Amino acid sequence: GTALEWIYSGDLIGAEELTQKGFANHQLAAEELLPKAYEIARRITQHSQVAIALSRQMMYRNASLPHPQSAHEVDSLAIFYASQSSGKEGVSAFLEKRPPEFVDKASTDMPPFYPWW
Image: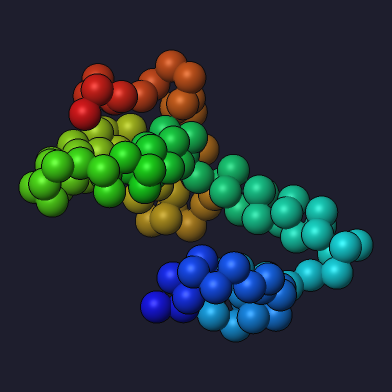
């Protein structure tokens, strides 16, 4: 596809083309960069630290697992453990029409299967 063509050709690819092809989400002027980065960071920090950390690790690690079943097992464990604390708070907050108050920390509250999958 497009990525292979870019790699093989060695061509320089501009921001407009990267955005059009979906390899970049935004095309910004220099003065817009930090405000956009802070906006995205604020959105991310509204979610559970554990859920974000697990999602990031699954994106990096699951693709290298030897079989798709292995990735499915990790996903299933993540869903189960997320339903225990962060998931309950997220559902409660949604039903009560209030912002969630996630208290779990990525530094101390990762599920027991992490990072040894």
